[in-house]
Image (cartoon, rainbow, N blue to C red; front, top):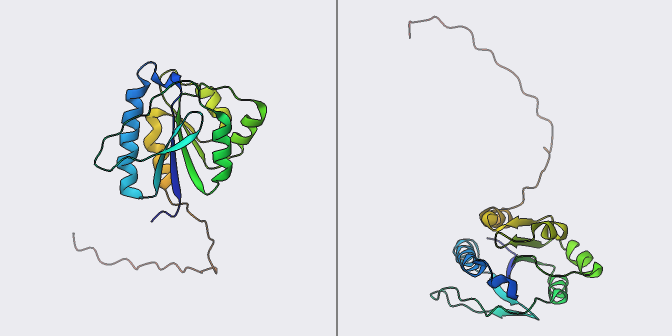
Length: 176
């Protein structure tokens, strides 16, 4: 059982309506819902524009995207990340936003930030500067397995064990 929370934050800026990103986003969210239902019930979905607000989808209802328009407020994302350090943040975005130096620094300091570049025109170069956990949409399966994979703890042996090697004597060959 995973003991952490996952917040899936969906960029709802106007650029997310271009070039088929909305359909890709719906399919990514369907996959994330299906995957996380098998792993944990501690997943929350949020839309991100001027503010970050929770989306409540019933389990039997298909994914419905909020209306995308305008831009997404980076200060809201920075504040959300700092206010929720115990939460894994999975941000679905095309990366088309303007960052000031302080926002870039704040986001790059978050170890719990996973960025998914949505769309063929996603600004992956910018996303890579913000997080070591930055991926393209087709890698969402890898990202989810990375998030939900239990971390292995390397523990050395408590004591040294001497192994003795036993050499078996050659038995008579009975043609087998």
